[in-house]
Length: 308
Ligand code: GLY
Image (cartoon, helix red, strand yellow):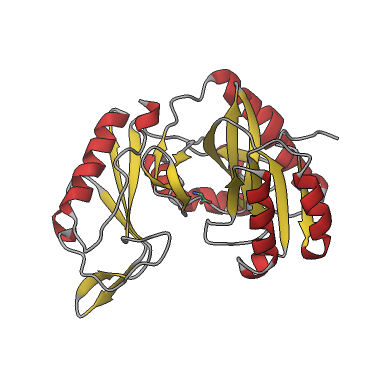
């Protein structure tokens, strides 16, 4: 059996709370707690002390995240830098899409609460050949083989949330979908016709398609409602959407009201731009974020700066 590299972990149900608390005592801090279900991107907590971890797990088991917290994974914290790898697969073969890095924290310098994602970049400049080869050999291939060996007929996207520790890849999370806001940079750089790729996994000729991507850098910045990821207000008019030339705007938390676009969610827009360099792509997205206006608009100005 091939063991896919990950932090050491154990999963506990509500009924096993006492064992969960004992397990916390065996781990070094910080300690990662993950609600085993969808929690709007907020279900992962990095507890800085064992006391905090115990308090958090008690709250999770007491329905903080509804049914998503009925089982909680307690995991060793891996200190490194994250990247997101996406593949399209017919269940046996796979093709890799452009690699991305997202920025999950609300505050600049990766501070504050976790969000669904405040921005993303592609390509990821710290990915070197050795890391890439190990990512494929130690993580992607064994995952696809595992799915195949269990007779699971899986066709579609797989999202590997990875961390580089030293120069080795470890899995933090899997998703059976693309990422948000990674999609806004991954598809932006993909030259292939997406429909052709999707059809090929059903026709069984994925291997005939070479993945091609543009060399340019893509940066997406999420424009959020003031207060997000906590309470925020809705229904603010969004101005200047019509005058944008250097970026593509992906609409998320918006709706039309009386012929105008207004805010209707925490993450309102994703502003995406291509540039010859990361700096140029960031500059274009920042310029667009400055131009678009709505009451309480908030966005991070440092997306990608850690990689420059
Ligand atoms: N950006 C992380 C996710 O889509 O889960």
